[in-house]
Length: 451
Image (cartoon, rainbow, N blue to C red; front, side, top):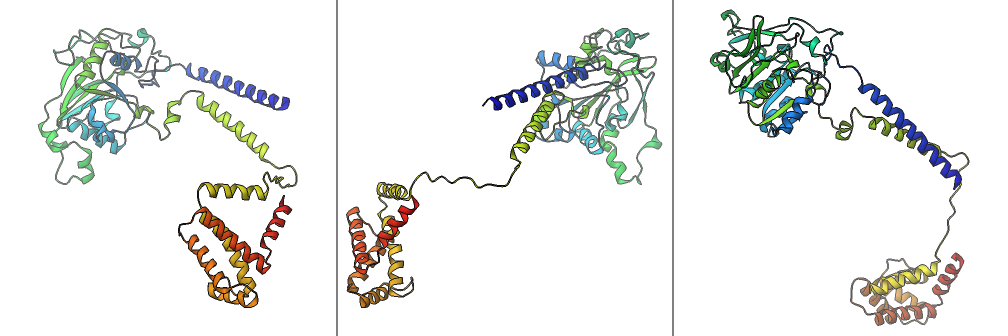
């Protein structure tokens, strides 16, 4: 027992040390510096480039907010009908595929409210094209490794606050917003006639562009924020829905949302569509996995600790399951004698009133012995067995055949009381004694040998 206790304590100490090492490595990984050149725009991220502050504020303020971890195709299903506003914030970890872009365009055309917040939205989705109007995005300055997104002075160096150009639903209660110096600008111009679709356009090109009805009937995009460099915030109608483009994620990020009226602008953008607001987490690399358990503990040391424990368990099973000598049979200990087994079966049959089973157990062996004694096959008829036995001894053939028929009738389901069953067994034993078959003595001898 002491040896086993020592082994158990040793394994407990090893597991504790592994858990401690995993926890320390996890904390070190989580302390990685947040960079504007490689931001993390997920609503789970609490760093300066993340979106957690806006998500939590909307959730605690009573707005219906979810994290969308499915592909955009799910927006067209019954579960996606509840989503009224879909928010995509770049830069994305997983790029949009053609099928996902087509599904998102279709969802907007049927009445969805899409919010793009990115410094280069056309690079991440073709749905930013307004049909009859061409929106061109221009990058003014690119972030570098030396820029700290947590420092507002570095992010807004030499930046002048922007004021709304007109009172709209998106600029309600907004006096000014302060973007970063890396914000892009948009310019809007009508699409020249020469760029319109012609009759010889291929089928694949037609599927990649908005429907003709949206291209010919959509009004001009509305500019809400603009300066001498270009527009910062625009929106336009697409089909029955609407698309909003903001070219600076810093305004809604954890590091910049508290500046000026950036928070108010973010609230206006996301709540203008009414209903459920879904933040796209699928393209931030947090899509729903087949193993929900592993997805729940992703990014924590729990999975590593579980893998280490599993490895230790497999090692223990492998070492204890190996044979280091010749195979030896296990000792067979007969805990009950044959007579005890017979007594138990007899008691069970008596309680269940299964007298037919008792008759069957005795008569089956008796018929086999009688057939052997008569020199005939086991499946021979009763009359043939009885006549041959009567010819060789003093047994009356008619009585023996009657006894065999009564036993078989009971076996086949004829009602029988315990007195009748005892009488049938007694008569079978008399036939055994008269013929000198000595079945009973042989059974007793075999039972004694097995004890």
